[in-house]
Image 1 (cartoon, one colour):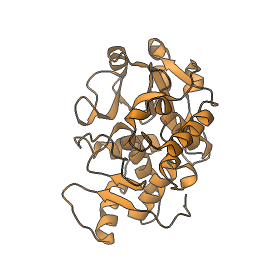
Image 2 (tube, rainbow, N blue to C red):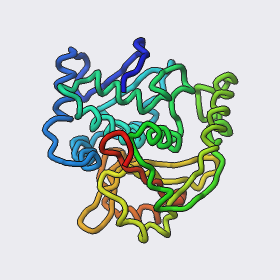
Image 3 (cartoon, rainbow, N blue to C red):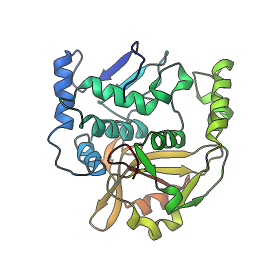
Image 4 (cartoon, one colour):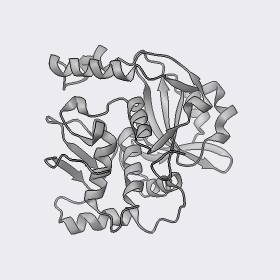
Length: 278
C-alpha cells in the first residue's frame, strides 16, 4: 500500500508526549501492534481497540487550515477510531512495523488512490470510504447481502456548505465536492433496517465495521463503530459522542438503534483476511 506522495505533512499526537524520535515513535506503534493473540483481523481490531478504551472523544480531528495527513492517538472521533484500528491491524502485518507503516495505511484508506491533493481528495463520506476499501480488497460490504436497497442521493455536504469552513465561501472546493457527490450517488445504497437487525444479527461477527445509516436527507451515515459480542448479545465499541470517550457500549446494538431516532439502520463491513476479498 505504498503511496507516491513524499511531501506530506504528518501530525501524530500521543498522550503525554510533545516531541519524539523516530525510534520512540516506532516502539510505541509496535507496542500496539505486536504480540496480538487474536487470529482474524476483525478480532485483532477489537484487541487493539481495547488498548484505547477511555481515550477521549475529539470532534473534527481531521480539519486543518491546509489539508494534511493527521493521525491522532490521544483521542478520536467515531470515524478516525474505526479507521485507525483498521490501519493498526494492517500495520501489525509488517516486519518490524513502525510509524511510517501506520502513516502509509492511514493515508491509503483516507485519500483516493492514497494521494493528498487538497480538501476534496479526502474521502468524506463513509459510504464512499467503504466502496473504495472494498475496491482495494481491504473489506467486503455485507450490507447488500444482509439488508436491502435504500436508494438516496448523497449531497449533504454541498447542500449544507455553511457547516464546512473549507468551502463555506470557496466555490472552487464546493464545486469539487458536488462533483464527488455525483460519483458517490451512482453507487447503490443498502442498509439493514433497524427493525430487521434481529433477523440478521448472527451474520455479524466481532470486529465487523458497523455504520449507522441516517434518516437525514443527503447523508449516508451518522456514526461508526466495531461490532462486539458480549455472550449472546451484540454490542459495539466506538468513540462515543455521548460518553466523550472510547467505550464498549453498555446497551445492546438493537437498543441503541431503537433509542437514536436519526439512525435508520446499519451498514456492515467485514475486514478481509488477505486484501483480496472473502
